[in-house]
Length: 128
Image (cartoon, rainbow, N blue to C red; front, top):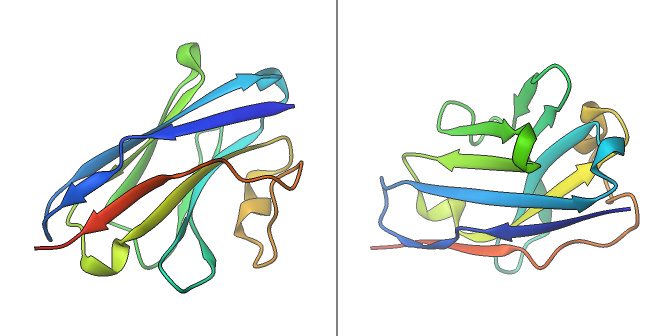
């Protein structure tokens, strides 16, 4: 099993930037995909971005494409989500996942983490 811990959230003004970090531990050798989801107040969890950790291929939700960027530090078992040009609608709790399945699995509308458990997440609030 792989455990993840998210950090880096906070309060930022519209147009600002934040970088979220996700640290993976445990059986990280089994991880094929890492990515991010978010949940806005009163709404369901939604896909944000996914990465194939072997090829570094990425895919982003249309709502964040061009503003958010995934990056990975293999030596540290970390993945980062650089978020630029933030909008109020980006507000929510951001969750990281590490998955032994294909990176495309994270795009499924009914996605669940391998063990069914989400991390604690990190709060991002975009407000003036």
